[in-house]
Length: 127
Ligand SMILES: [Zn+2]
Image 1 (cartoon, helix red, strand yellow):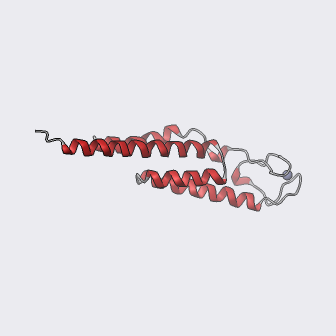
Image 2 (cartoon, rainbow, N blue to C red; image 1 turned 45 degrees about the vertical axis):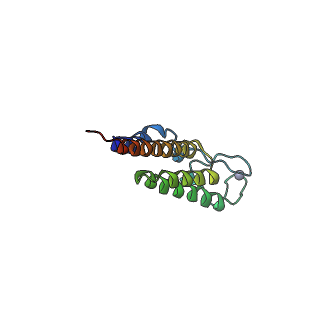
Image 3 (cartoon, rainbow, N blue to C red; image 1 turned 120 degrees about the vertical axis):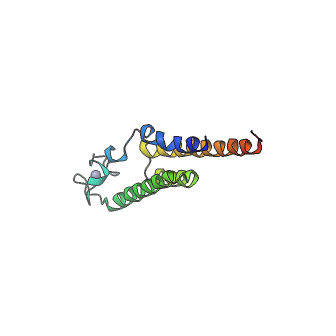
């Protein structure tokens, strides 16, 4: 019972995170030109020549936090994962990171709830 309660959130993660950060179009913050996905951000905007290195670094830091959070989820460290997903979202707000942060919060609550039930079951003296 405890096993199922702990593993279920991980099982659903693959299905619930529908958005993908790698497909989100990046827009030049100066002139709003579409630049392609985050892996294609150039050094400067082809239309207005605004420097985009910082934007690229911010997106990369967000993706790094998102990937680290995914590893924490698989280790059932839901609270830490939720914080990292929220960090990723503060750096780069998009549907993918928002859904992941929301799901980590649900997984954390489900996990705490299952621990609570498990402890109650342990207190019962079942034959
Ligand atoms: Zn531009």
